[in-house]
Amino acid sequence: MTLLLDVRAATMRFGGLTAVDNLSFSVEAGSIHGLIGPNGAGKTTSFNLISGFYTPTSGEIIYRGENIAGIGTHRTAAKGLVRTFQHSTLFQEFTLLENAVVGCHLNLRPSLAGAIFGNDRRRRRAARERAEEVLEFFGLAERRHELASELAHGHQRALGMAVAMAANPTLMLLDEPFTGMNPEETKRMMELTFKLRDSGVTILIVEHDMHAIMGLCDRITVMSFGRLLAEGVPQEIRENPKVIEAYLGGGAHAA
Ligand SMILES: Nc1ncnc2c1ncn2[C@@H]1O[C@H](COP(=O)(O)OP(=O)(O)O)[C@@H](O)[C@H]1O
Ligand SMILES: [Mg+2]
Image (cartoon, rainbow, N blue to C red; front, side, top):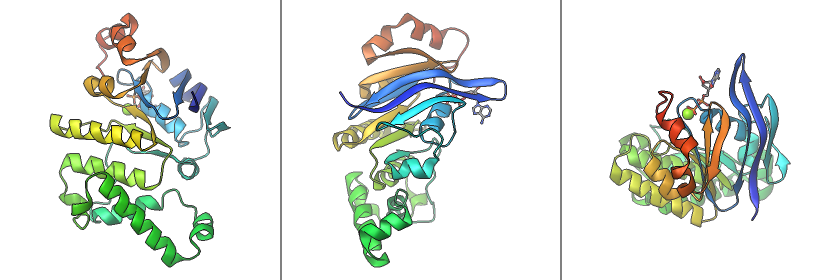
């Protein structure tokens, strides 16, 4: 078993509020790992710590053996750690292909890209080829010249994943990818998530849809009030009295 990500005693305070409180958990390479918990539990804040967007008040974020706490999203992306957002961040007036090309450049620092590709033309061609490849992977190739704004909601989400995938991630963070999807779109998105994992991408996913989470994940970490509440395989989580209490008790909304 290889640990790709190891969150060690991460704490994030906003003024007097502790959004993430001494959280430790790890993600095995090649797995689909769920991060769940009631609304306000600290899931999105944890993603912001892992992606380097926030600097933890204390604790470490070990990714491939290196502490990446607070290094910033550009540098984590360059290391293959890429996140998609809860809300779509696509360029609506760009075509699918143009969006995917933008994704290709997310993890390439100009100097490094120059060293690899030699010149701009070769770099552009490589990006274009990669963009075509990821659209094909997500079943969007035929629509590559359509505008992102013309896509149905489910396809927009798939394009969001394609854009993230274009950057060649090792670890992909998905924040609520199934929100607003109908059952058919959810089913297709689950298939795409499995396909992504099978292609070698490790996935950490925050999601409200319990059915999807239970069906997708190898392991699940449960947070409540910023803290680790439980950790285990889906069956263990489903039957854990503390987890059931956290979701049903205290008036918290299931998240
Ligand atoms: N930038 C911020 N400033 C102050 N409080 C925040 C900030 N981000 C999140 N919080 C608070 O931290 C807690 C955890 O929020 P969040 O991580 O968004 O939870 P979740 O994603 O599990 O619903 C909440 O009480 C929220 O109001
Ligand atoms: Mg959230």
